[in-house]
Image 1 (cartoon, helix red, strand yellow):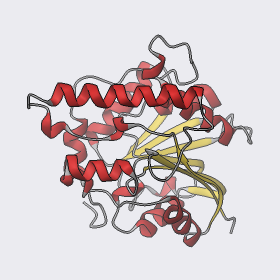
Image 2 (cartoon, rainbow, N blue to C red):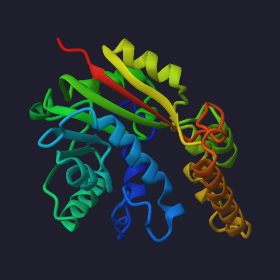
Image 3 (spheres, rainbow, N blue to C red):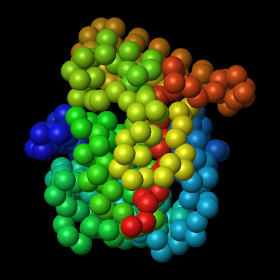
Length: 272
């Protein structure tokens, strides 16, 4: 375990140790049977289209950092025609990522390695690098970003997604399960921009994403308690109600630093 890593391999191995794989993603489809179960993925799809839509992506190389159980790698291959790779230090997580690619009949390269000590063939090899909920697990954000930057070609683009733990989601997580909260480093969009600039990136976009999603909260410690079903149903129903309003009244229910669940940062590696 790298001493910069607040979570550690044991935590992720335990989390990914499951026999069932996640369902395939269809984020581009609004008419999925349970649309509100697909809302986050649908909105994510539209954001990614706005990011990648600037470029001819067919044949470009994309690496997902923290690819355990990734249902996004097949999406990037099929939707944008990219050559996809994933990197993770969890053997269990890598195995599940490979099985998902096989299930979707997508070719991809899954690499089991630490991002601070990657294989030489990965250095400067990718047009795009993306991570969903990885960067915030490192004590030294700048050091982690410096390592991630090494995977990009000059002029390559890094897409970083982190939870908004300086807003309501962080306040609630701290009270629901302090141990889970403590394996994260809370960051704002300002913090994320600063760290990217310090590491030689030009910021293309950095924004809060979605108005609310209480589904990001982790409260498994209550699973065996009598009030758990009520807590879970309340969180799901409140979240979906907010999505209805966000979908119908986007000018009022806008992403913001107080309630938004996520922050996205898109930045380009300065050519050297």
